[in-house]
Image (cartoon, rainbow, N blue to C red; front, side, top):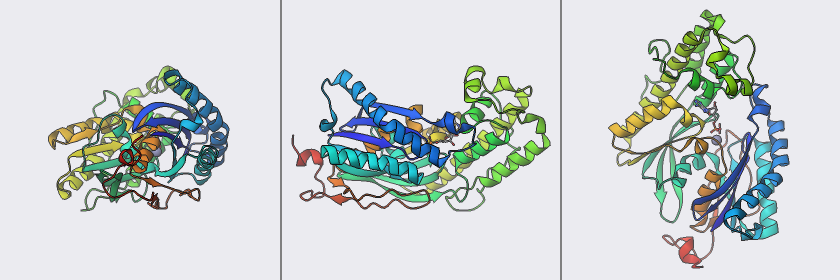
Length: 384
Ligand code: KG4
Ligand code: ZN
């Protein structure tokens, strides 16, 4: 089954082709440099840019696919998987309209995908997931902890165990970066500044751990960093560097106080990754039978988080699923892959599918094709 994935939930426009759960090829256009000067994603710019890029990217994608499969065309696509939320509503609507138009034109089936679940299923493109698993999603907009149970005949079942009550982990990174006058999204620069630096573990609190729940709160940590920086005003860069300048020279070269800046960054990275570890350990104690640990989303690219989760998985003898860096941030391969999981069990949406903005739960309102019984897969149903 050949599935086209469409991702437009925030500031990356992505298309990908996945055949029977395996990536064929993908294309991605990032808007981050356009939003950087505004200190966050500007929804209207994001929607317009998705609208401009989608048809161009589709041409690129098909040209790329033809390199390995000559003559491959739109009508070879069996289904279109589209990120339906959560995300920026205008941006999602552009992707959904594009997907519906293609379905109408080609007769392909349509499946709407939960963007958060797709992040956590993404490592399945690299290796089969060991489930039941704990899934930690740490991105710019979300910090969610799930219990994940694979189903042999359809989508993986997700049970939400905990979530952030205020800022997401990535948001905390971005806000601290902003305090230092680094461009948006600044998480990666804080990671870079902290490389090789020993953190001061007394400098910042591991926020919201003295309770017995599995939720997160990062706004207190951000305030603690703001207070510390208030005492060290020389650390904030006088002029915001561009992403190009940062790529060319590195974040450290742009400050005369690299050592002190490194200490703040390392201590902050440590506080975030330790907070995540404590809650994941707590969840493992409460959820017997878990075999795998999945960590996904943009903050899963963070070197402190990767190291902490790697040693936790080793200690607990869990299979660790930590996607490669390109699969951590937003992409369409993960959307196509998650869509394929549902489609192979006969699940699909109608053309009345709606997008779901941030803050609202994404319903599992797909319908199962007539003739699909429990335990029967699409391959068995359509032997061709
Ligand atoms: O999953 P993602 O690409 O987009 C969504 O939010 O859905 O995540 C983006 C987030 C941003 O907050 C960004 O600063 C953060 O991931 N991020 C990082 C790193 N790379 C990306 N945060 C910390 N360390 C990194 N290396
Ligand atoms: Zn995302």
